Image 1: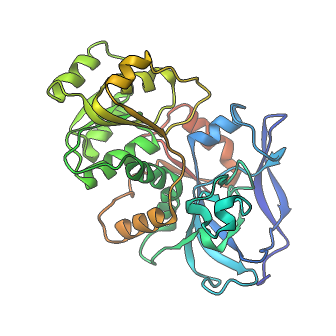
Image 2: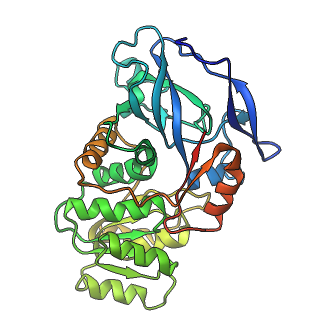
Length: 350
């Protein structure tokens, strides 16, 4: 096992009791085709909050949260010959199920029909070590801080994948609802991709100001009654070409759909237990809108983002509001829940 210790500290969430504790647990051993990564940092994500609040139930009764992580390879299992102890890596936030039709045909994580999500379907990385398939890692250059690489694993990769899903083209108008981790990075990514104009929407003034600094052309309060008219004015009455909902609420999704123009595309990126209502079918069909749910990304997307950060094209150095020790996981959750910080992105460091 490459000199791995017998035990480690890990945050453990009891889904039935809704209780989060930091405990001493066995260090995972790498199986065939797997790698154990020593965690350098792991983010706290809003989807973690949905689990802790009971909106989404993990597959395991007691599970380690955390799916935004980077670190160094600590040990490799059999049949792993392209990673070695000491390699700096960012870990994908999911793994292939290994049993669906696509996996049986060798497709892997990019096309898996039942993609398993770290910290929901298997133990995550609010811990000193995490085990993962060797195919879910991307190398990180020495000059890129691992704390920044950790953010790429979801808060940047997921919105980057959404750009691919909707096929964003240069000079298309874009609206982004919700300026947390996903939406803030979408502002940066749509700017890099050549979208114009970029409209960012969030009720929090600090979030809107931050979006302006990161490349948004206009910022609006979605709760303002004048916002629909302002969106129409900004787009010359044509409506948006593409809208991204990073909130996941029925109200924000409906507003985003109404802001779309003819043949507009809406990507649902945020998650909530809300039921969707998009209005009358005839109106929806006549306007020829496309609505697509988006979860995850391709491994090539994660590699692209490491390249962009390494080359200085994408700056995520300002994406972290706090780095806390693992034992303060509950404090990090509180900060995220209460929107304490700008940006609101807390990392845990074992």
